[in-house]
Length: 178
Length: 173
Ligand SMILES: [Zn+2]
Image (cartoon, rainbow over all chains, first blue to last red; front, side, top):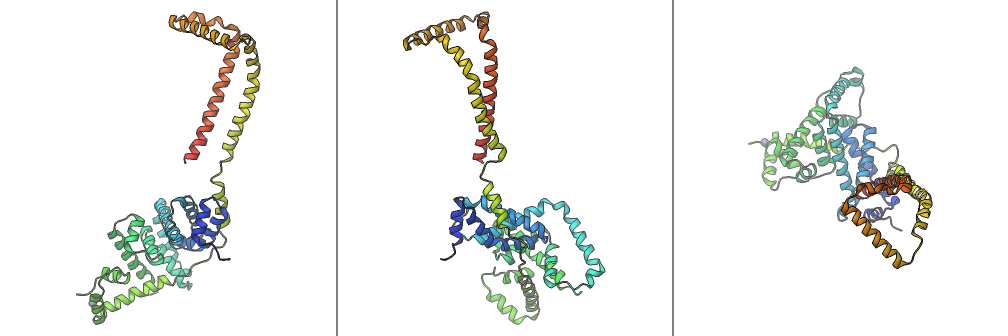
């Protein structure tokens, strides 16, 4: 017996089959969680947003175009939710930056050899919310400039400027001599 | 002319239709080639970021949420049950009043009822057209039960409206 396709599962989930939706969640939860974790850089928050993503997906299942792929769609939903989440707590952003700066100044943190992936995550987390999401959509979800623009409902010129500035900042953070 | 940062970014993002011009410049210009390599290494670094594992599955929690959401919340189910119970109580309570009213009609034949209704209607019609308000208190024995009855009726209607309104709103949502 072959495993049901995503499409089969979506059709069944639409009819109210909880197990079918559960199977979809099992298939994509790691993917979706990683989208959230790359953008938010905080496990608990990322888990909450991943869960919210699937709830959102469940309620939008009726509108989902069966000709499209579920995985890319649900990952874009996650990126958008994370952006909204970050924007809703904009007031905290300067605090976050301060906290980050404090951390890098602490001597034990400087001495400690952090894993490269942690450095990359840290660098991503230091970017403004919009930059993070554009980097996520371009580098991890492989969307084109046009697709990013329509996904985030921003002009193409903003997609480019966000992306290019984000890369500049990342390069400065990651390639700076320690 | 060197390539701009923007052009280098677009080149690596495959957002440039005609790459030949860029290719020839990159082949001949060491400076631009080095800038491209630097940008490429950032791309590679971002690509290298491994996916992390979840500490627990989200499936069970989400299925619980998803399964429970189409169902009515407990308080709404309770309201509906209360409605049914009150309707039953109202029926039982109303029975004596109805029984009291029934003998007054003396169960005449259908035509008699019609004639009676007609005459009653005519008197009522006259009453209304003549607008003799002082005639109203001629129903003293029924006054108290009528009041209680109308209060009960109003209460039941209110509950019915609220309950069904909530049910309907939930469905529309
Ligand atoms: Zn050049």
